[in-house]
Amino acid sequence: MNKELVTAFKVLKKVYFDGGYASIELNNAFNESLNFNLITKIVYGVMDFDVKLQYFISQFYTKAPKKQVQLLLKIGAYIKLELNSIPNFAYVNELVEIAKHSNLKPYVSFINATLKKISSSNFTLPNKDDNLTYLSVKYSKPKWFINLMLQNFDLNFVEQYLGEQLSTKTHIRINTCKTTISNFLTTLQTNKIDFVPSVFDDAVWVDYSKLIRVKNLKNLFTPQGIPSMIVSRNVVGNTVLDACSAPGGKAIYVATLNPNSKVIACDVYEHRVKLIEDYKLNMGVKNLTTNVLDATNYNPSFKENFDCVLLDVPCSGLGVINKKPDILINNELKFDKLPNLQLEILENNAKYVKIGGTLIYSTCTILPCENEKVLEEFLSKNKNFKIENVETFGVNCVNNNGFKTFFPHISKTEGFFIGKLKRYE
Ligand SMILES: C[S@@+](CC[C@H](N)C(=O)[O-])C[C@H]1O[C@@H](n2cnc3c(N)ncnc32)[C@H](O)[C@@H]1O
Image (spheres, rainbow, N blue to C red):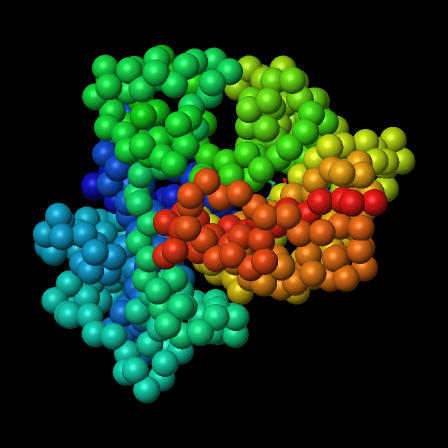
């Protein structure tokens, strides 16, 4: 049996049926003797193209088979439609072998016959008359997601958003607490790791799977997206509270950028505060302390205590679906309660900002109801706060009175939102 296909099927079963996260399951399955590039490609490919693959395989049966059988067929359909490197007969035979040696034995002849039909058929998009189905299959996103996008943005914009193919390289930040930028770049060159410059001097784009194999680079870099770095670079002042901080990416960068600052990084979950602690130790940051705190509860000792309060609030995460396609697998996301929670966190933590201080609000979603609408509601009741322009360091984005939204097709980054307010009285 082909070990790469066996592993990909195993990882995908965890994601589809046991609520697993692809990145974690892939890490758990890691084995140096296997072609992990191929396994990763199949796992992320099947999730990315889930809707399209489902549409394609459904044409070859009238009664839907067991979900695990469908998953195996999706792997076959993915290889057929998106991976030209594996010949038809090879993947059909290998997937049938996997079925024979698993609990899918009773379905082997169905799987064999269906995979053969899949491998010899061409894919055609649904008719454009049913626009929702057409867009959903073309861009392989669930209908509820397309609907949500069309409720918020016009059709042309949505198509551009969905059609954007972001770089497959990973944006990493060089950890200047432990190395210098020039030493790090020299080590990359010595190890023949190609890199592409970022908008920031202390960051580059790299092939992550190659980078993590270089042993002496441990803790000298960390994956961090451009918008996330922009958030930290907008922080001003020496006393900083990050109230929703885990795993700590932004807070640790704030502490790195300004070694004279004192950063307090909090999160409501103890196990997630531990992530900040571990991350801080690995990165070698000294000027950051952590706390387990619920950001919706008022803490009198923080009253008007901070030059800057950073609120990277819990959100739907719809801006990062390209990187985490598992978000959309299985379920329609329910996030109607989020704007209220976001506003509650904002109102509570605004009390911790000194007069003349700054409040930064960010999310990894592009939905206005979680972004500018929350800030506008807050501003309507808190006249002592006014909008400040968010500095974006030359990265293109949509500017709404100083609030900045990053869209993949405009910014070439994941979807993100940043708003900045200043307290006047
Ligand atoms: C978007 S993540 C923060 C990411 C982080 N800023 C970073 O850059 O690594 C939101 C965080 O808010 C935390 N959270 C959710 N509800 C909270 C609450 N009521 N109080 C404090 N933290 C909360 C979650 O546990 C999660 O770690």
